[in-house]
Length: 157
Image (cartoon, rainbow, N blue to C red; front, side, top):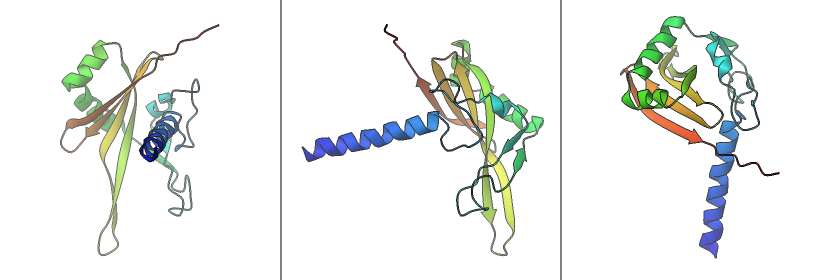
């Protein structure tokens, strides 16, 4: 009985995190498109606000906009499109809808702060039925992870 309750609690937590991630709960700059899918079209713009964590930079949005160059996007997209698994998704009807850099920050012993976007997440969308997130290691010029999410809706009258 206890193990069944524990399994249920773990599955509920996973479902909650998946729902929160799919609906953009952690990003104040987004709006869900249909209550289930996250609107990544906004990331085709070159400017995106950086949402800091509470207690860092004065709370959410403490740093202002981050500008992503077209050259960075092109580099990420070239790496993404050269991967055979991504090519298979594109052939299945997925479209690239966004590029989001993941910025790492390093503080040196002397207090010098360095920020660098060594990783990016590329979003692919297939109609309203599927989404894929592709992690790209920019420094090694390779795709390191692909998450494919699908949704089936059965409407009954």
